[in-house]
Length: 378
Ligand SMILES: *[C@@H]1O[C@H](CO)[C@@H](O)[C@H](O)[C@H]1NC(C)=O
Ligand SMILES: *[C@@H]1O[C@H](CO)[C@@H](O)[C@H](O)[C@H]1NC(C)=O
Image (cartoon, rainbow, N blue to C red; front, side):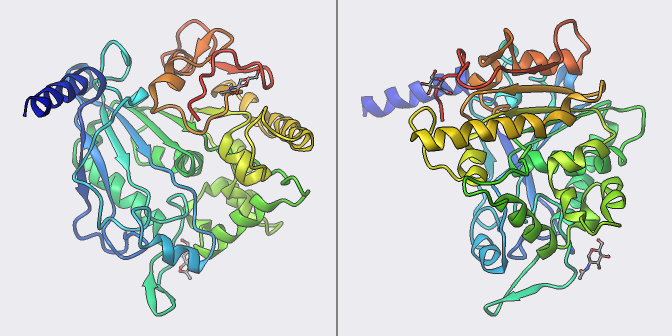
């Protein structure tokens, strides 16, 4: 009994010091065409802003890779990344970096309205196929772009229509979605709104794997055409690639980047561990790799370096490219506040950019392994 009381007291204490107030699940009522892969309604977790943050909003697009073919999407439709059936009512934004409600740890955004949009379409909120698709006798739905529209509309009715400041963000597949939809979402706000975007770990590069095959490009092409994404990505990009029949490139950060007119900040590791595993195809973690895999690894970092040139080409944009072995870092305290590049954290660099403060707004690390501040929290 006393153990129970003690652990309850302890969890209360931990809750008070470490956790942020939770987000509550909002499911879209009468979603119409805007449904998850399995036909269930989409939704988001919402935490209301307070004090000076009542009219400021951060909307985070959840990640979780993609489904690459019909069978894969059918399997996903039975998981929490394809169905809202089993989503909990509450999400605790624990240890949450940019989502933390601690004034001390997150002084710039702690009291803003926070929404985390749940990912259940498998194509970075970009697809639209009108009719349900039958796979092994089961209907599945490719409606990511409709989901995005329905959720933005719902958030508008929750007070976002009065927003004075708005930050779009997302990690991984949601980080890619941030590039894809930055201009579209901006178009839903009056021009007087201060509108910015920050993509976290969404800069998936078009690089060969260790066997010399551009496998990631092949996968992205599959997703793009399977889910008919041409209407749900950056339309300036589509216009530019239409004549060469390469519109699928608009599903990749490095190609669509130059068509984004909204101010955007890129947060990414130059040796992102998801990319090392899935794009390069090595199974080891540097430096514990064979000599040959280390060679592929350095090659990949070189490729990332080249592919990231657009990020530094426009004065409106900011960046924090580190060389830590990580994937997604804005919602985790340590990588957000305690990984440093040129003496600055991601959090400080982003705020310098967002608030136009003194100090660098765009930094790039030296190449791996100059990772003095990276803690291994892989
Ligand atoms: C593909 O997307 C376009 C644009 O969003 C839409 O007009 C068209 O109907 C879609 N095609 C199918 C087969 O659903
Ligand atoms: C940092 O680099 C050292 C080698 O210098 C390596 O042992 C360690 O695993 C690296 N850690 C991260 C998080 O990158």
